[in-house]
Image (cartoon, rainbow, N blue to C red; front, side, top):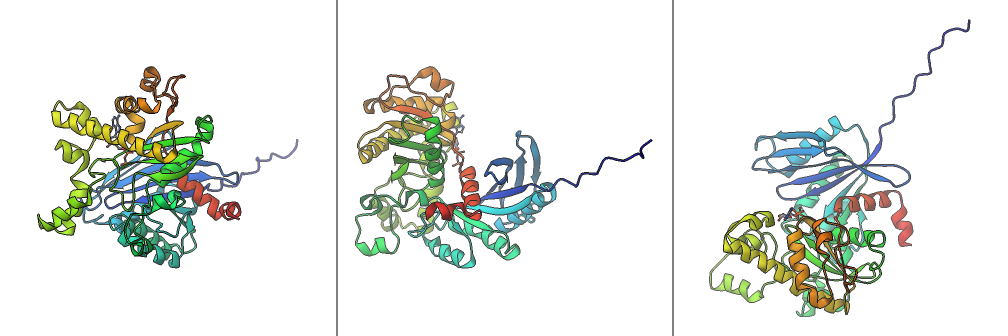
Length: 414
Ligand code: ADP
């Protein structure tokens, strides 16, 4: 009889390669882990966030099937600030996710006038991005903090910055300027536009989801707690409702949107408000929250019987329709309109109300398709095709990061 042989033992499976995507704000740290392979496939393994940083820190994350992986609260002493949140989140990821981290992609709000595409991070690049803190004082420092932490702790780990402004950097000159003396433009007072990663993702999806309009004139409405709209001509941004900061354009959850600069002068000169107080008013107390006096959340306003809640929603719909007219003028006509982000993806009522206002531009909604949240929600005879396309800024960042570290981006740019 042949000697008994045991089957050859398989080596332990190698840990999968993964990319970490980080989106760091003042009170929250959002992250996703994407598995990747040589083919460029990206699959989300973990999605989570630490929020309430400095007040009621809480770490939550889910796996691929939305299965909860962690829901843990921390004392403020343990997680007083963003660096501590980065540390705690990193520790949890290392202990529970046995992956081989090949790169980290960061969302960075401002790429200034220079960066029109993602960039591999070095100490020199971080120093350059530091100069844009004055252009985005609320966001840029938080975006840069985890980058610096990781650069010093894991210098060998490639890191990539992806900018909210980059997708808009090819705007025509007339769209990029304010009518101020030239020296202000030179020092960076420009109409940058934001939500660029969301718009870039949508532009990338259009050939698959909406091939009939992907080469045409399209308005994308990113309607979340921050909200803006972008004009796409043949998949490229030519105009945005946001400008120098994320305060312009549409009214948002807590921001007023377009405002006569005279109001700012009035607040300072007549009311004696400090810059900090004005900043608080514009970033935290205005918009839907300021108008309704109830909430910044569209769901709560829809459920409320208070006439002020209804007025805030009327205002939002009106402003979206007003700026749609502006962007249609920039495009010289309109072939498609895309809804995305929290409100755009989830509120059939708000979509229907906005679509009704866009009738003069050629929009006819398919009521059933809208209720069922089909991707195409306009009728066959609608001159403008209307779509709902969920955005995915994190996947966009993972794609850019993978392309940069594998050299694909440089080759594409050559
Ligand atoms: P952000 O990423 O900027 O925080 P989101 O894109 O997640 O924002 O959008 C959040 C907003 O989406 C919420 O403030 C809420 O008003 C709105 N929203 C989410 N779900 C719904 C829904 N089912 N109906 C109406 N509005 C919704």
